[in-house]
Length: 542
Image (cartoon, rainbow, N blue to C red; front, side, top):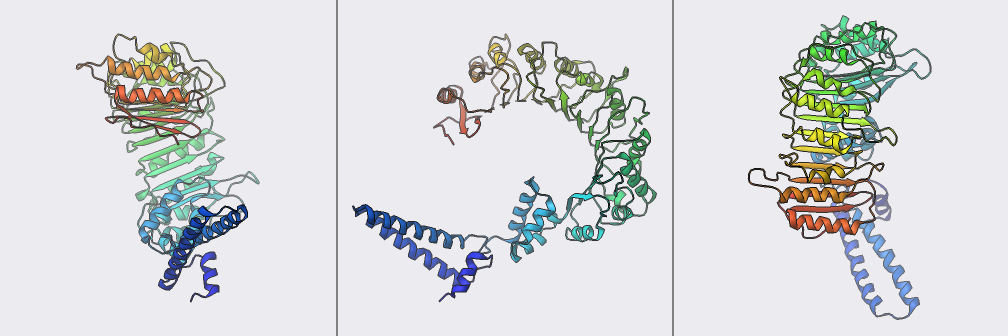
């Protein structure tokens, strides 16, 4: 017989069930299932309302008890999941959640039960990250705790994120931290390091301290990825010291810089003196001429991210010599103001290996689509057709919050016959473009395989019917010489449409006429995916 105290503990604690307890729980579930079946049979023949009500109450109690016992048989309670699988689940959980920091989540998981703690400790990758570590006067960095945390990660590549704060006073405990310098130089070898602070001078001090001991420790031999972020800089001297970090740590392959606002009287160093970089991200409002000089010293980068932070760049000096980046495959531009001319940088870049171009604008109010001579359109045309080393291998193009006229969009896409994947996210343009595309003498984007139109702007008139007609027309006008290469189309509509029945009919027609697989999911948005090679059997609404 099961002890009543032990039974209560099973429901309120996280203990593991022994074989006797498992047999007891299974017996209780079976007994309640049998009783529930008998009562349901009785319920079908009863006529008195009072008796029916009493029987329904008994059924509810029995079903609730059965669910309680069934919960005790879950794989987690029975230790059926191998520790390594449980550890992988923990890793996915802490790496995808944005509500709590990595260490808070991991500490919470370890407090659930001994089995969970043992599984977490057996997963070295869980302990290779220290993120959200803030240093604020008078608080100091607990180096011993960081070292102990990293010790559990074994030989896994380690990541350290440290932020210096200035909440109570202007001083920052990031800069005079000898303990931090010791950790960086003498501590566990780091693969990724992130240092951010309000003032560049705080980061400057740390860099100087590390540089003075660069030959003593392991940091320079292991560090591959570095992020430095700041808001203010008192002078260009601090930026000069920060620039020299690449001379101190030549092993860096990925560099991310979030720089302070530019002052027109600064003599900012333009040469990074770094040929080892393969990924470079820079967030700033510096003039294009300075950016180009920085990029000129990075001939081997393969991925470049330019974050404009929603700011207009300062007036640039004339640039005479173009910058050749022969290995660059991915270029992402973020935080662009739509009416700015910041894409003029394309006119000075030679990117023969460019494969992916991603441009995200900052939407401002109810701005109207730009005219035909929009800067981004003109500059993309220059990028793919402007003289030697042009970007003739561009396969992926993504726009976010692009405000443009139908003619302007046509001028861009008609210059990219090689394009295979197009994404238009939060497009601020009317659907007239797709209607007019049906009348073009030559097929637009003949090699296009994937088309995504996501979250069209509510400030413009966009009709899905124009897109549907465009897709059908591609199929009908295809020839053996110019076949329809389209394989996948995805549409996301940001609001529930009143004409959803009509939309479903058009999708079914596309399925039978164009040979596309159609799935429709309706939550707060309408999600449509078309996949070539399969036919629609029914539309599923979720």
